[in-house]
Length: 234
Image (cartoon, rainbow, N blue to C red; front, top):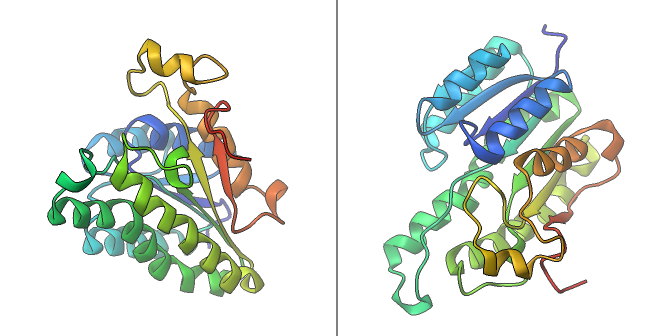
């Protein structure tokens, strides 16, 4: 059996996902990465891990990712459920198809991954999962309606899962980034952020790495905002 911890990271070809993969590799994890483009394969090769091409919205791609990882390494210690951005637009002009697309992209991806990895983590007696959410999950933004609505649901799922599997040694939390430098941030948006700048992807990855680490062993079911003070709620 492999001695080294293994971390699965989705949407890991660039941005937050890639930053998480690189940070976890620094912490000693072997990264197993997925992205819709082939870029996760390149990142994984660079880090000495494994990369796969596939989508978090495809249950078969997720199943192949988890099954191959478990066969190869006989363990999965950590999972980062990262994903792309769901459709946006005026609240009542978003189509049913776009809502369903968002559901697959930002909520069912995590539910499906949990179904796949939980039996493995139960057998190990440990595991930690971090879901990448958004600052607008509990302070909804009309700029990101699908994301706001469905990632509020992700927060609820995270809490329900965390409570059910805490006694099995499995933890689940979410990280809620604000604006991040992997996307262009205009001056008006910068002015809304108390820190006056977007996050670096590495700063989000640091929070993820902490939550996955033994240093966070008593933290589960939480939604941690990493937003530079952007949201107003306490």
